[in-house]
Image (tube, rainbow, N blue to C red; front, top):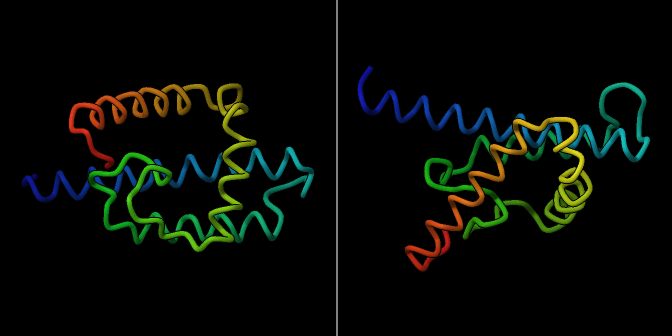
Length: 123
């Protein structure tokens, strides 16, 4: 496998992981707010579909850490407000329901902060 193929596979793995995390967070939010008993309610499914589209189209996937720290905010304002609400609610619950994903996220967040400090820049 060439360097380009490895890099492409790495970016696609990162996209898949980001979609998985946002999917789990929206599911926790939807269940926690009793929107539905099975699956996602229509509004939460719409938010998930929107978030997945944004991840698929992200031109910074190779170098970015988290959408919240990105220099370009591609979510429209209303969706950005909704996803923030979901993450604020779901974040603490992620440690209980998905501890490995949460720990990985926290480690990557610390690494990103360290890189920012060393470079003196935002990703």
